[in-house]
Image 1 (cartoon, rainbow, N blue to C red):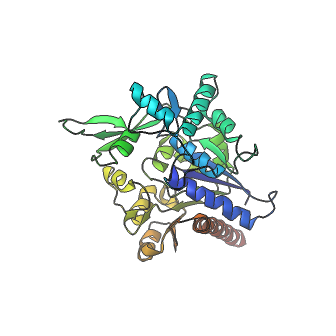
Image 2: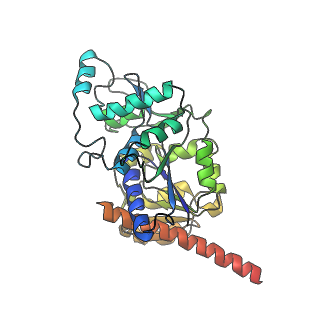
Image 3: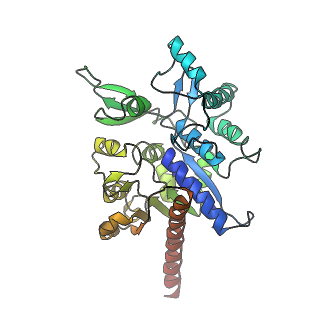
Length: 349
């Protein structure tokens, strides 16, 4: 195995990817033989705030992989202060319900300057990533799913209103804590967006593709909605392994259940597997990892044409995240071996 691609959202995706890096370091002590990891990151949460380009999932990935994330809050930088946010609030600028720390704002200022200098988001992300770990950069290549703006909005009825409005996903998620019933999601700009050549090349050249346990609707779903990207994953020769974000009928993190309900999908590992679909029937998945608590549904998942395994799914720390990533790697290897065996039998006939 030489190259691994992970499709990821924010906090859950960053935890999984950190575990993947740790597991690869354990399995391949020699950095020369260690497989490369590329993370294709959701940009649907992106927005302009106070004139600055906010990319929450890219930043969560970057901070976590750089080892500077706030592990207590689960987002942002460790050791933050919020003096600038207080000043912005005093001026009535930005979103008062969306607090950005001073260090975080430094990232946004740098990104916005690079974008205004003419760099693409991919190029700006590479430059921001290069500063970490003493200039050695991150152990993972971060790629925005598209350089074209794609922002997720939510259809809701606001308090006191009699008709629906379309609000930015972050407002629904952070301000209202997904407490307003969503009737649907719209990715503004999705029709004209395209995956970058970097993303398409990474997928085409991968030896394993992993769908991280990120939100299947607004994280992985947004990535796959970019025209041409789902098709690229389906056309890849690499096995596709998904990790369930649902354990025993409940979302592992965040409010993915509210997102699934909005699109008419039950909050269960089985329903999310069916939502992605088996590759043999035109879907995406070759293998699907569910929690040990969901072992009873393995047969029903396999009936969808998807290999299914029950493994410890809780990512409580780096060790448990690494074990989960190891299970995903093993599932990809098993799928590759199965394909080779089938090919060998055909040639032997």
